[in-house]
Length: 360
Image (cartoon, rainbow, N blue to C red):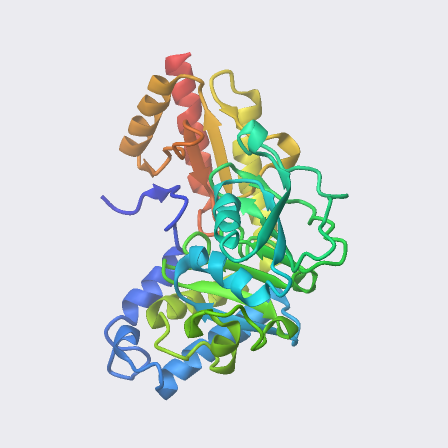
């Protein structure tokens, strides 16, 4: 049937030319006579792959020299534990809850110390980002934690919270590399790659060096100590080699496209097409407060569960896949990551117009 327009929230659409290159190199990577998934992670060929990937990511994000880039396993969810284990010196942390992932991270951190929820948008099904300009930050907080783009609810922090001098830790899984970012504002900026960068199985964590120490909570597993991973350049054990290779190809693609400034413009343009339609539609409506809308994830509803289900089924038949919303919001959600072409969004809007005319 050929390629569909894949609006999945993750694992998600990847650039077609990246997949094509991976296919071309599948059996013989650059004359090695083997696939990347067969080669030793200690080989010269693989060493070049992981080092080049890191170098390209550093260039794309303008990562300062005093930050380590780690390629890890275990999903962002494993970092929910690793972060407090490595950072909770006073055993106190402040969490801002803007969705399910921040909430899960907060629950996990409670196993290791005292967690204060300093702001939350749970009262309105996480449909907005709370005002974080003057929060009751705890005197002895080891860090302040946010999930910057909320995949399920379609919200995004447009301004980072005022942490009053405390370390900011941010999960950027679903907005990673979608726009330029000032890494120096964070103690840790990390995310799973399976939404906007690569295949599931890799987490990239960018950590300020002074936060990487031997002083971790008692009982911290060797593998979850940032220092173990940093001292061994992410090669303490066998890393997710093939996934890192694909991330590296995506970094090259992003550089070729013109970098993160260009991606931001493209993403704004794509999102505008969809949001402009939602704002004038009689049938569909967006679920997020306008000023907090994500460029990556766009939830919308008709207000009628049967009609929503009909829409998802007919969209699928039209080659527009994975539009069913998360069960906690209902309705639909279009994830329009970097690799989603503008034509995909245009096709979706054309289909929505047609559906609205038939079902008005």
